[in-house]
Length: 263
Image (cartoon, rainbow, N blue to C red; front, side):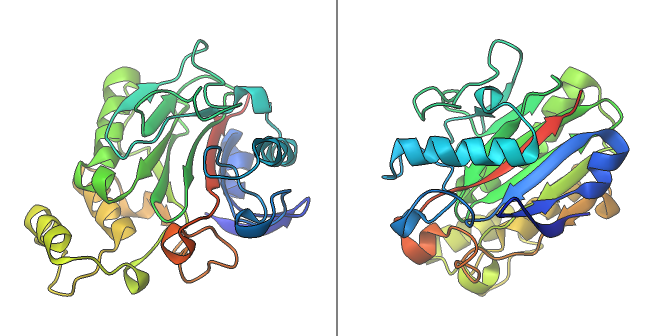
């Protein structure tokens, strides 16, 4: 359900089926088509990474025009590699749209049932996850690095959606965007041991992590249908010419993963 496409000079992964059937936007950006230069070239959406803030704002405006949302309503969390989940209401809409300091404090996952409020996470190797209930019309965006993954932020977000909005896990659709994969993510003994202890059924002896696979495993364990989980299968490290990768470049920009309920 994710299709790589080029629109208005931007490389994107979009769920056309969901947009046509439910009016729900799910989009993952790449690094091409923006105004940033050098190590941030070119569609860097992340403030506070060393890029010129004016270029970041311009990049967000370019993206908003292309995808059809108001940039002033773009909503982001601070992303501290934790498991705090916040429900976005009208009062929080637009947090993080103009600066890193205005993002929702200490938050790595957002949920909303508000129409025309784009929620997003920014990544450069961590796993971006979008969760959609097209029946109850609720969307969530999740930032799952290794810390968030071991804290099971994705299934916790599902549980929060269930408790606040009475979603059915059978209806939930999951989209996993570009992130670093096992082919490029070697880890040390201590981190590997922690994951092997937490997930003994899927972590082998090789000291690598496949965070998207671990998150899928968690979501299946939470009762989601395997046919409803759609993985982009893109490795940011391997495709660093097209996607920002912190592990490949250290100083780099951030791509975005966006969900929005259309009115």
